[in-house]
Image (cartoon, one colour):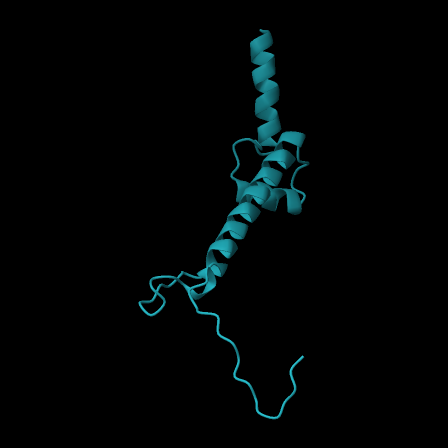
Length: 101
């Protein structure tokens, strides 16, 4: 008899328009919280926060991947890129009539 009462109480809560927050997707959950259709529980807020943090991490990784240019190696530098020190260091030409340091 106790099980029937608990089941009946659970059914009446869902009949009043209160959705099961655990069953909702992240988008529907966020929209419901913003529209104030229901009060979020701690677990709901934590779930939304974890989703936001994961999304920000993915965006940061994509930005890092886009910023890194592909290293090109040429035959003139012996297969080394310019950043790796493949260029020769040369002195500037002396200008006649100019005093040195």
